[in-house]
Image (cartoon, rainbow, N blue to C red; front, side, top):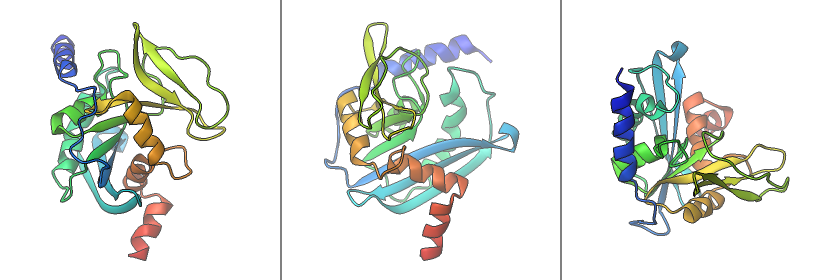
Length: 222
């Protein structure tokens, strides 16, 4: 595998990421959430995409794609491994979102192209990265209180907000994916919280992907 070529592709794609607000619909009527995981020891890539109506945050559509994994795990190049399944799930949607949350990094990546930036720029939808772990950069200690935040800095630029969404929980890393500014990214994540650590779009995507009780209950109620 030619990592030098992939690195150059990342840098070229990152240069096309739009870091300012460029919404087609405000407030968004439909907000999507995307989550990618791996099954069968990594041989199968599973992507789930959900569509929630805003502001009720009611689940209105969900799609899952499972495809053979095409690339091994290589740190820093995860989006290339996750993109095919995301594309497959995206193509199943009947309702495209006005704003998309992706479980993963946006520009808060060593080459500024995490999966949220990679996928968001490919489908050209306003996209936000909602990551659970730091990939690069530094940040000051956060207060224990929910809502406390610090900028994630790397090489003199802010790449994300490090934000404590819930007491006694590790913070989230909220970053621009595509066509959303850093401050707007944090604003929309805050607007989509439902009392859990994760915002509702990615929480529901994870619930659908993993068959969690909340999703099973939702299915049984229909």
